[in-house]
Image 1 (tube, rainbow, N blue to C red):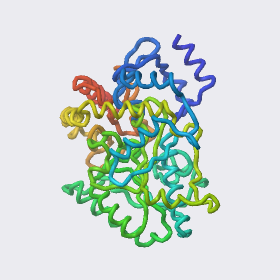
Image 2: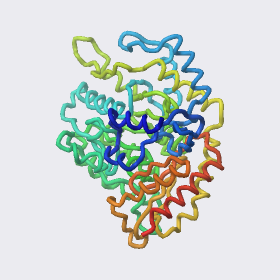
Image 3: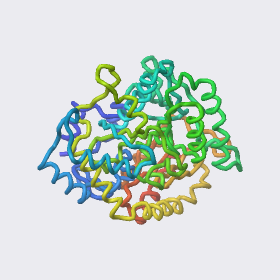
Image 4: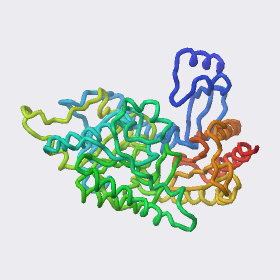
Length: 448
């Protein structure tokens, strides 16, 4: 059965973020079911989903509460256009998101995926300034090593070379500030001091370019696709004040870090700030259905609110905007946060992850073990003393991936960075299993 499915797949399916020729030697794994932290392939092999299926799954596969909610909604309404129509799930979800997100975010605009949420925020910021008569504002500032998606606008404000360089001729002309990432801080310099010092370059760019800049786009606290690099909340605090001072919007991309990943419901809370736009997706539906939302302020909403003849309305739409099934999955996900002490339990799970990886801090081929809440990253390195990385062509991370699969764990490294971003229902014993497998995989991958 497995070989036949693989043969059929490779005849017609083009997989994401994949050099398809790899599958000549790297077996494709057809999955038939999932339950809790486990996914099961067609041969009955089980794998702990230690990366939440690309960071989306919060409360496990086939979660009974989310399943039940979607099934009930399916019998009532599967979809209706959101232009000129509405429905109870999208209204209730919007009300609840306004209640739990940072103060001042009061309007919800829906799309299908994270990249589209970024596109919405960028277009909305640009269009706001245009409606206010500031036609000179056409550019965006982003952070070095950032990632915001792979549609052209989102890719334009991303700065991971692997994703950006091929399509550079198609992209917007953006301004890039140095990253506050703490990986390269000097010895004995704290995360806070390093991130604060790195803000000087952003301040200089805002001072020089504010008149032509619509917004700064940033991933709060963790640059996830950028090798899980992390920084201190002080940078966000300084950025919020500077954006206010220079008259520039702040777009917070919480697509990967929202809904408890960093220890608080939203990463911006750790800096006690509220952005002008907040983009959410991934965990929004608990990993069930594609849905994203861009939240913004009343002041921005009212810049578009006008007589039709003035042609100031926001020009963006998706066929599945505010899909009732997606909204219902999101509401069921939020219900779990209300009914259970999720964030409190995550503190215990995060400490477990920390404690079980402490020994790796001294590993000769581990540059750093870093953590922000339920995100933990282990960065492999060729020479720890010289800070010399392994050549990317050696694909050391792929060796860890292969080994982990053979031991029943799904880890999908980013380059030479092994990371854990598990569902919140994982147990300490399962965390121990995952970390032991990661440790063994690192030993195997770093043998010369």
